[in-house]
Length: 187
Image 1 (cartoon, rainbow, N blue to C red):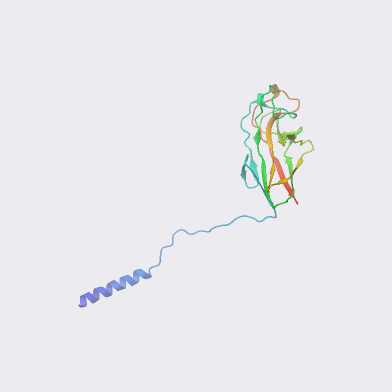
Image 2: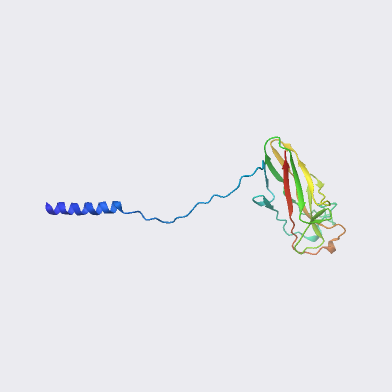
């Protein structure tokens, strides 16, 4: 009986020691929360552009020189071919009844259009809104965006075109990139 009691005492001691052992700590770190709060009462998104925060990117893709329209007729080429259009309609989400204006300012202007960089020559980008060609001669243009049935939609279509006075033969191929800053004003 003493042997059994002695055995139970030893087992109890091991069990108590095991129960009191500290658990192993594995990975440690922090969870960081980042962001900001701003006074903007509207947000912008576009189904025709990929976005990262407030910035959007429109992939114009490769375009053949013979399909380029002109400043006066961006949608139609010299040979009557349809130009490649990129719809980048902006959808603005604001409180009901908000009056919104959109100001567009290219980094660089080319005639009435947006100058491109990267190697292509005698090419520019023209923006069209509701069948109206936007004129950047003064450095920027502003569009009013009416609030209709719970949303604000600003239709925009982008075209590569030839610079004013350039023929298809004057176009030199290459990268054709451009940037236009946008600014929403609302009341």
